[in-house]
Image 1 (spheres, protein in one colour):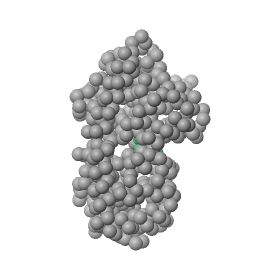
Image 2 (cartoon, protein in one colour; image 1 turned 60 degrees about the horizontal axis):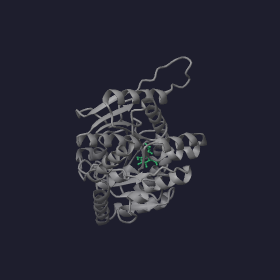
Image 3 (cartoon, helix red, strand yellow; image 1 turned 45 degrees about the vertical axis):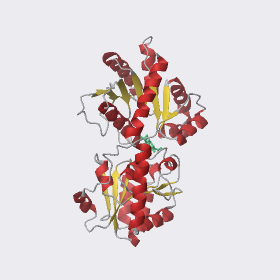
Length: 375
Ligand code: GMT
């Protein structure tokens, strides 16, 4: 197949899923054309079957806001014609599914199947700004195929949007060969030189991730056990979190390393993942931790209940309960047998439900079904 993929190229779960999907499809012999305003994070063009088409949005004094949605639609049309694409798969409804709808209309009577994958914040954003409701519902309904990355998100979309289009649940996935228990010990020594415990948090540091809670939990943990905290990623809450770490006199124990490409290497050196978000429609980073046999302490919210089994792969705790999260963290870090058991069980779950070898064929089968229906 020749597949066009559009996603946000920035540091975030939906872009990571889209990029990894494209790489996996190319590996399986499909031709993949990424269409976005810059090269997606984690995408390199080393495969001869992966292409990148930049969307350029011209500036004009009249435009206070550049019309990206229209430029994207035009580029989708052009790439479909030039490369003879079989379908467009857009990740994140706003505005990608609207652009795809326009491209599809412009190319008629030639058929262009469009699939939209919902990731979560594209749906919850509308809860905050109702002006997006009608257009998001419209573009979802007009897509030929719609997928969600968890049951939770699927139900939420039906309930809050009144969407009638059938939504296929295809979960997020992890490459179980790349994400595996493997210690780059040199890297570990850089952050935990005396082999103290190493906790990790990875995100885009937005308010929903509860970054201050991560620091608060760690503060409680390090009072009980010698430990360090790795903060991977960047975003609006970083400066405040660094300030809080300073106030708590933890600057030599909390390591802000910014955005990193080799997430598997960072995950591989950790003893515990903290993910105390207010909401997660899936929580991809929890799955990546499980694949690396790293126990997870996460919030009992949204799609995380479909990923992490409470008491089996880690612990799920109501959001904002920092004392309880810290107590559970200390429990895991002070009991080596428990940590190993949780880690191994997490790996087993990742292997049986979420490896690329299982999930990518689900996407391919869905593509084939949608293409056949549109013909
Ligand atoms: O919250 C993020 O990390 C970014 C956001 C996105 O859309 O890029 O992530 C959402 O999609 C991820 C990939 O499907 C999910 O793993 C995250 O749970 C989801 N974030 C939220 O629901 C808050």
